[in-house]
Length: 268
Image (cartoon, rainbow, N blue to C red; front, top):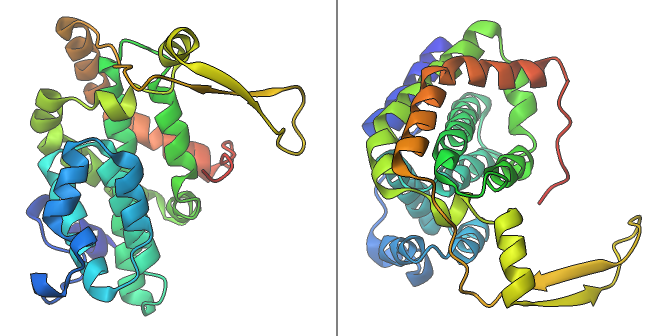
């Protein structure tokens, strides 16, 4: 198993796919899955469309192209959302594989999930709204509900190797992430945006979800909210402190799942 983890580490850091695949000619890739089109969505921070586009992939050529794009953009240090998409697509693509490659792909998916956890935790230090990053952490927990039991089922040695690899990937991508920030993904959905929408948007009542109590109100903003950012000296100091204990923090997350102290949220 250690060799598989080493393979996953080399895949993440060196840019090789977890299981080599023949290059896909671009004329076989659908226009909506072309790397340039996915780059456009990422540059525009259109995470809703990007997530739906990759989630709904059905053609083999598009799947291979999407995986390659997600791998490259993750290792470049783009949004934690890209790592989340990569992890989930790897896991889904492994479903029909023989046991050996399935385990390797799922190992890589698990490592990418831990890396996404690290990126959310560290990069969220930039958010002026301190309540916002926790929402992305909760989203990650329910993002791929099978990956956490898989991680919990591994031996302590295997879990430690996963953590070491995730820390290596975080170190590799840190310069780009620190330079670019990830405000549009990590710093939304908190109290600050809610208060903004109360002032600048509209509210409407919607039918209650079965089992809920009281009225359900949906807030709609005017589309002009911009997440605030903490002073650079503050967020850099916090990010540095989080990096210093990243390995132990990830080990604690794994330990919580291994001991069944954590209940997964409902699927998003």
